Structures are given as structure tokens and as C-alpha cells.
Length: 123
Image (tube, rainbow, N blue to C red; front, top):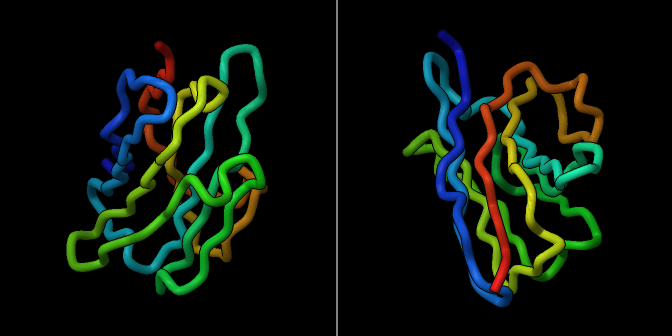
């Protein structure tokens, strides 16, 4: 079965850090752009960050710029989202998704999605 698996979520205090991982099962991520999305309680899912297949091009939504860093290790077939200086408004279920196309906020461009991992920022 072709699927993505996120890990690394949890409960963290404001100002803390977490690193999310996204790995593939049944296929390789190495040729795909990988997007990170999140859905906060009561809100629509939004794009957070994206990294192209080479790892050389990344983008971030304004609210996380300077705090989040997306990276990939194609030798491990894994994509990471390092989240620093976390805020309560970062609380959400975080998803990774893979696309054969370029990075986009358009969810319909993505072929595979993970099941999501919960990130809760609270004191």
C-alpha cells in the first residue's frame, strides 16, 4: 500500500520545538515535492511549507517564516519539518503530502497524504 507516515508530533510548551518526519511506505519520496499542511481546530487545512525534490527550493506560509525549517534527506527517503519557537496558534494536525508536480498550496496537486500527527502547544 502506498502511503505517507508522519511522526514526531506531541505536546510542547510555548517557545518549544518539535521535529516532524514524513516517510513513505511502498514508494520513494526522492522524486516528489513534499508539502506540509495543517488543520487547526475549527479551521480549514492550510499549507505550511513545501520542499522540492532536490531540496534546493523551499517555501513557507508567512506565519511560520523564521520559525519552521523544511528539509529532506534523500538517502533516508525522509522529509523533516523543524518547528521552533512554537506558539499556541501552531496547534493543529500536521500532514505531509507528495506531488509529482512543483510545490503548491493547491491540495488537489498532491497524490499521497499521510494520516496526520497532532501538535499541541500549550502550557
